[in-house]
Image (cartoon, rainbow, N blue to C red; front, top):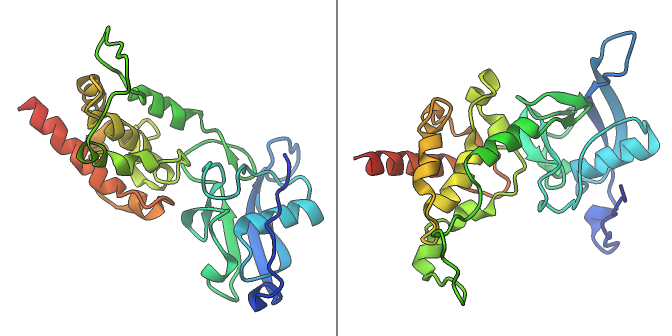
Length: 255
C-alpha cells in the first residue's frame, strides 16, 4: 500500500512543535505458536499535536515494527477503512488529531468491537457487509420501467433521505452498539441507515421488502436507543433518529 504523506506548512508554528506520546496498541498475531496471541504493546513516539492517529500508526510501522497491521486507504475520512477504537471510543484514525486526546496520558488503540479480529487492528468485515446486503442497499425501480430520461426529484424529496447518503460504511456505528456486541446477528445501525436511504426515496419500490427484513427479530426493534451509534458516526449522521424514523414507518405501513 502506498503511503501518502500530508504536506506540512513550515510557517505554522504548530507544525514545528513536537511532544512525547505513548501509544498503547492491542496486538493480535494469530501466527504466534508461543506466548499470548493477544497482548498490549507500548510505543514511545515524538509527534506534533497536529499529527493524526493514522500518522502515528504509519510511523510505528515505518520506524519501529513493520509487522504492525492496520487498514487505511484515502487517509481523508472518505473511505472509512481506518475505523478503530481510540481511547475507548470508535473514531477514524485519519480524522483524530493527537491534540484532541488527553495530554500526558497513553493513547490506547484497539480494533473495533464485535467483529472477529484477523490480525492486530484488522477485523473481518464480512458479517457487517452481510447485514448491509440483507436490506437491499440499492435502488429498486418499478419493474419494466425504463425511462428515457433521468428520474427527477424535488429538493424536498431528496432532503427526505439526504442524511443517510452520507454513510461511508466504516462500521463505527454498528461496532459501538452494545446490542451488536452481545449478539452479532443484529443487523445494526449501518444496515438500518442504508435501508432508510432507499425506503424514503420516491423512485424506489422495495420499501415493504426492506421493512419486512427490519421488522424481523434482528431488525430495528433490537435498538435500545443508547445513542452510541450517533456519537461514533464520523459523518455526523443522526443515526439514532434515523432508526426511530424507520420504526415509525414500519408501524405506519402496518396500520
